[in-house]
Amino acid sequence: MGPEAQAFIVFSLGMLVFMGTGMNMGLALVLTGAGMAWVLDFFDTQLLAQNLVAGVDSFPLLAVPFFILAGELMNSGGISRRIIDMAQAWVGHIRGGLGYVAIGAAVLMASMSGSALADTAALATILLPMMRQQGYPMNTSAGLIASGGIIAPIIPPSMPFVIYGVTTNTSISALFVSGIVPGLMMGVGLIFAWRWVLRGIDLPDSRPALPLRERLRATLKAFWAMLMPLIIIGGMKSGVFTPTEAAVVAAFYALVVALFVHREMKVSEIYSVLVRAAKTTAIVMFLCAGAQVASYMITLADLPTVLTGWLGPLVENPRVLMAVMMIVLVLIGTALDLTPTILIFAPVMLPIAVKAGIDPVYFGLMFVLNGAIGLITPPVGTVLNVVAGVGRISMHSVIKGVNPFLITYVFILALLVAFPQIVTLPVTWMR
Image (cartoon, rainbow, N blue to C red):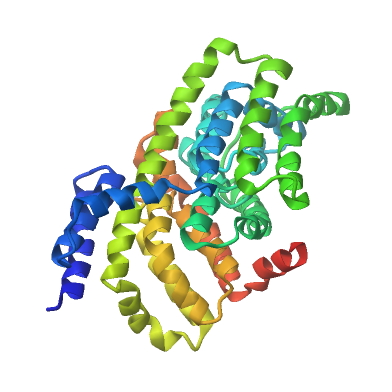
């Protein structure tokens, strides 16, 4: 057995063992990379340290901490709550209205924060107690909120798109544009799935519809929140700022609105917001650093060539190749979180897709969408854990409740595999 095959075994078994023990994923990647370096007779602590630094030494990655900070400021400064209040004013009177409020708010918040965990936590904190009080089934409600939360990685601005673009050298602006239509499809799909789930469920009588004046008042209160995505997308499209700079603009805008417009956050609270954002940023950045070590060793072991050999016969049929890759990523998503999936597998799979003639931006959208679905797929299901923790619901109930929406997302994924023009045409128009 050659050293390349041994390195592949070390990588596969190492990740399985470390994940099974519950080790921090960033540390698991570093140790796996070190093990591969030992097998390849390339072990050098200085080289490992250099790769750790190189993993986070990227200007576009500066967008990550600022998008995380923007999400924290939105939740602390009342921006998220106003979006939910506006959605409730317009559709809260419909049967199952709180579910539609969750979907509408999820789509709107996705266009601001780009973080599935931040959006899910905000939605669950505000809406789950209201749904429980009004007699909604908790497992289905929690599943809907979790499913709505993962729209955030798809609709721009998206933190996973930034990480994917940096990792694979793909245009982040084009990735942002590619997520608009699929993200809206996810929202529409949830509406149909929610309507189907409501059949046969005994819900309390709907409250009367609010007068138009009250609806407009709620919309006016959410005006500054609604302006945020327009500034971000408009600024990037017009060339005023880059996607990285857009993250800074988003964080600064959220801070100004929270302090001086809504006045729901005090200056003394900024420190705690910064600490929470810094903790989340540290986790993400350490993942990026650890993945760089593993990726470097994967390249030395020439594992992409091995994978190309396995998938080589499918290169002549791009749709079949895409379908097979999506199935593989679905399986990976059950065990790995979105960020490590991007950092480990995107650089390996993208060259194969490009060789088959698949558009790299389209592949990036599909890759991130698949990984986002993994956030609500057990046993890992990071977003499911957030909803279960915030709503004090058992993980088993949340998993049961998310199934109808998970099926909807898989159908959307299959639709995009069959008709890639849904993604590629808008990107071509807006370039």
